[in-house]
Amino acid sequence: MIKKVAIFASGSGSNAENIIRFFSGEKNVIFPFILSNKSDAFVKNRAEKLNIPFIFFTKEQWINGEILNLLKNEGIDLIVLAGFLLKVPSELIEAYPKKIVNIHPSLLPKYGGKGMYGMKVHEAVAAANEKESGITIHYVNENLDEGEIIFQAKCELLPTDSPEEIAAKVHKLEYEFFPKVIAELL
Ligand code: GAR
Image (cartoon, rainbow, N blue to C red; front, side, top):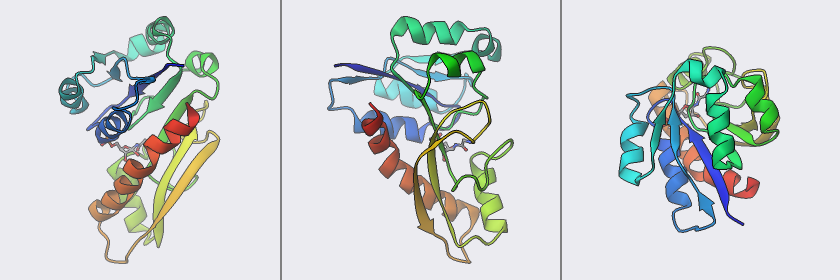
């Protein structure tokens, strides 16, 4: 059966691109669009290159249910948040139980919650001299970064690792595992 996946991204979109490329030979998995709350995010360029429609939406459209209607009308089966930074409204969570997944660039529950995203996470990890970091893929619930954990992977850190070096290690894990976990969920 054909599965339709909606990807949301707010920034660079390297995970979004990696996921779409992973499934490019798979006719039963379709990405009808990439959605973003940032009209000028780099993920827009990636969407164009991948020939996938890019949909920009405002916070108002996110909250008033327009995006939920769009997802329903398209018959979306799974929602993937790949570097997406808006809180998910409860109507959307209720409409897609265990069908919204997020990736977070740390070993949750460490370094999660409000204000903890992207490089901010890696800066905090470096400042705390952590010996390891990693990724968490989890279902989305009402509380930021607190939904049920589906998968985690770790990487070792050196005392000399800069936030950028930590980010590179974490991105490597994201590229390797996020598409595979999505494939399992479909
Ligand atoms: C990824 O590292 C992802 O884990 C993180 O943002 C980055 C997006 O990179 N997500 C969060 O911090 C969510 N709280 P990308 O746009 O290149 O995929």
